Amino acid sequence: MAGVRKRLVTAAAVTAVLGSLLAATPASAAESVDWQPCADAPGVDCGTVTVPVDWAHPDRGTTSVALARRKATDPQARIGSVLMDPGGPGGSGTEAVKTGWSLSPEVTRRFDTVGFDPRGVGASTQIKCGLEELIADYPQVPRNQAEFEQLAAHKRKLGESCNRLTGPLAEFGDTKSVARDMDVIRGALGEAKLTYYGVSYGTLMGQQYAELFPDKVRALVLDSNMDHSQFTAWDFIRSETQSVQAEFGEFATWCDRTPSCALHDRDVSKLTRDLQDKAARGELTDPRSGEPVTPLTLASIIHSNFYGPSWGRLASALKSFVDGTGASTRLREDIPVNYVLPAVLCDDWRLPVHNFAELETYRRAAAVLAPDVKISALGWATVTSCIGWPNRTSNPQRVPQIHGAPPLLLLSSRHDPATPYAWSQAVARQTGNTLLTYDGWGHGAYAKNSTCVIKATDDYLITGKLPAPGTHCAAVEPPATALTAQPPSTIGF
Image 1 (cartoon, rainbow, N blue to C red):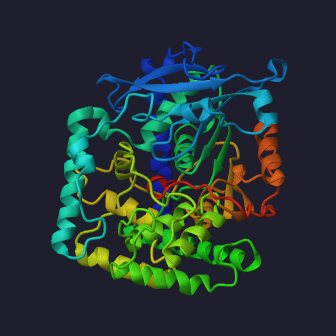
Image 2 (image 1 turned 180 degrees about the vertical axis):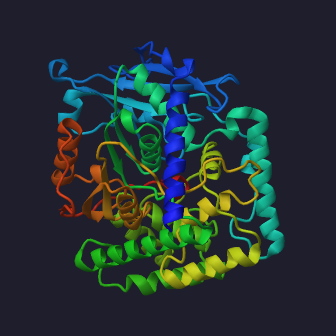
């Protein structure tokens, strides 16, 4: 083990040196932002930076990365800029900032808020894929080897269309490249060191930035962490599924204690298992549309309502299935395709599944771990999205090696449906950084209206002061009447 650790440290040191050399190339050295008022967002400035498509060969073409900025509300107290990413993969930081996404008033008083669209996303040069390949039907849950091969063929054809229509950028959507782009943004903003808030998949960007540019870090807040050391497909599915099943238990307990829950005084677990069995027999339909509801669709509906959480909406939806009546809100949405998702995931994660028998083993094992939800729809989608993908994994998972950076602040909800709490614990342990735990529910701890979480985070961003190791912030009870949630098609990191 000592030899392995020594090799890892040596590799990390070499990576850091190479990162510094690449960051000093002309592509990043003279970069600046020509800010102009955004046409679609009063009070917000828009701009771009230009970065190499392939950071290993900066002379082989460039791509554009879009930015949106709201200036600090108190210029006299301004500290600098805070760069922000909302996750995804594929989340648009520019659109989020344009529509009002920010940190607390105390942070926005002292910092310019800058959102960015990672390479391939939104207003940046886009990764585009063929419509015919995107909408083609394929077995999401294969029932035999022939259907497994159909799944693999679909993903291969989709990836080939992305390569054909996008060009080289389709093969360089990885997060390590994004981290290098972030350093160009830092320099273009005129910041000697980076201040950053990233949530969900944005945490992987922050982790890899600290690996590559430890001496360029001022303060990084990593909220709801990706654990890039989930090494196998089963590791990924297992940890995601265990987390979602645990969140289901929290939901059932909430229904027991909340009279306004549509399933109050009902056995929520038995009711949901009965619905899953009915879906597996092909007998469950959406009461509004009449469309069949598969076990994976039902798992997606459950999962999507855990982000907020929107437990009131979920209880009403499950009751509508039982009663066969129309739900209070639409249960499913037309599926919008995120062109970037597989290009990023399959570049960042090597999660091979070799045949139907292996995939079916994972599905059955997950159902044993999660008798109510059966599987994490997000974990399943992540693993199956890369089966047959034609491009190589250039940034495969590894234990993060951060050396020489100032202390980082990690945040996590104790009950997170998308990035399990255990993932943030692992990153804190691997990197030796402080984890602040919000003992509540949902994805993205900073956005859960906890004054404890907000104050500790703001203190760190403004002064660099960390909360005491092991700090926990009390849960904030979710609203019983919450009826909005991300549709199942948009669950992600």
